[in-house]
Image 1 (spheres, rainbow, N blue to C red):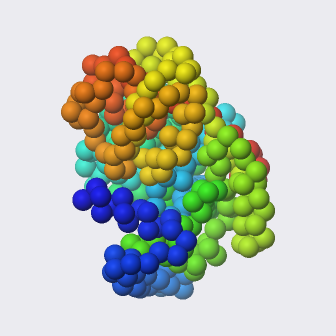
Image 2 (image 1 turned 45 degrees about the vertical axis):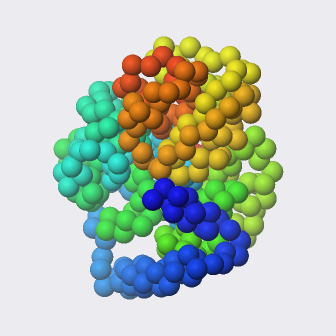
Image 3 (image 1 turned 60 degrees about the vertical axis):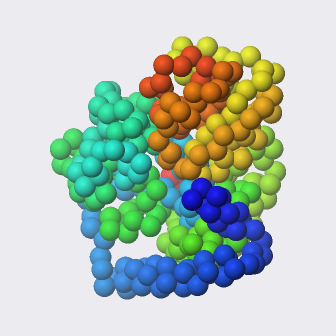
Length: 339
């Protein structure tokens, strides 16, 4: 199954994919596209109307499947809003967590964290850890979760993590992110390509952000200029850079130049591996996005392991002292983005 998934991901980011597998995926994408266009038509023509809550709603999402870098951008927006005195809640579907997301689950009230990463899901738990002062909720029904946050806790601003395709809840600001290198891939709809919606969705975007996951940002800046001209909407660049590597148990930093095993379960693993040029990466272990780790995944690794902070929240439960996480710094002008 993993090999098929890997091959499909390769097809998603080939310029002119060909072959039997692509033809089959392309055939399936017509049905996916019909469903997506029908949904958007019904909302665009107001045949179906999104529900409103008594709060300002910001959606942070993307046009493609995983790995764009929404999570740290959501956190930066939330931290900024908290810093200026707003009461903020992040609402996520909680994908990959064991909690029943038919319920409304409060992962954090901004002070205490009530569930671990396995229960909450890696991204909501990361938000709970890294966004102090901000409520974090998970639910499949994000309207009810937002309504609950507003009515029960007096939340003034709701941030939807990965909310662009979730049209059931009215939003006041739609921010869409795109990877500066991966872009829209082969520009085909799922499952033939990475696109979750067709070009009709571009008209809903209010602000566009090009995410640069590189030590050099010239490409992202060029792409941002092109996209601003193409979409005719405000476009900015989010700079993501490696900061330091630390032990997830005691916080001790890992000396550069050491031999390590790099391991992750994220949407775009190669970009993470490319950040580890200060270390000798002797092996990489890549798992499917949102993989729930077991001790068998790491039992045979004796040396140092470097992983992402998203993965670290799930690996912290193991009694191992050789697991390190790469801390990234996210640089984005939130005031300009929200202005």
